[in-house]
Image (cartoon, rainbow, N blue to C red; front, side, top):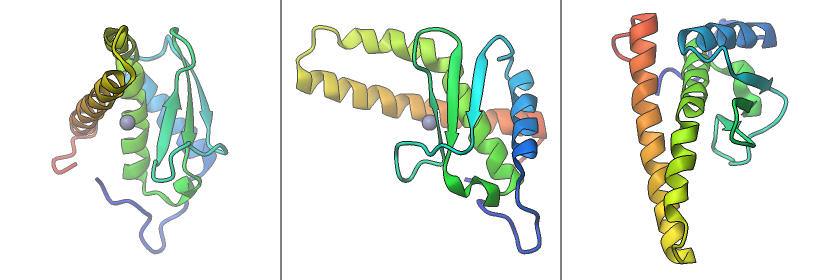
Amino acid sequence: MLDSTVEHGEKLITEAELRKRFDFWIRHLRLEHWNFELRPHEEPDGDEQEAEIIIPADYDYGQIRFNKTWRKWSHSLIDEVLVHELIHAHLHKLQVAAMDGSRGFNDEAAAMYMRRLGHEVEHAVDALTIATLRNVLGLKDA
Ligand SMILES: [Zn+2]
């Protein structure tokens, strides 16, 4: 995790800045063909989540929601969260295909399979997020 909140004296993030960073990452991650809605005024479902991406159907559309603290995040945390959620978009179809692998499992086996899959996807997304931040921003210790 990068520095999580603004240092004393640093300005709060504006919604315009958030959208500008979002557009920057869309280009760098080659997701221009997706239709995204940034929803900075809607909270993610989980309490501890900084953000979440919701992809309601199997086509290239996603909504990204942010924890209400986002205005106080550092610029590096904003970048980290945006890249993380956008990499989820890249992996979405792979995840849906993998979820199909639990068809025919009983409830307990399906739940175990989905937990494992979710864990592995998060692990891959985290690693790809760090690699992207390092490669695009030239960060050495992200
Ligand atoms: Zn995630």
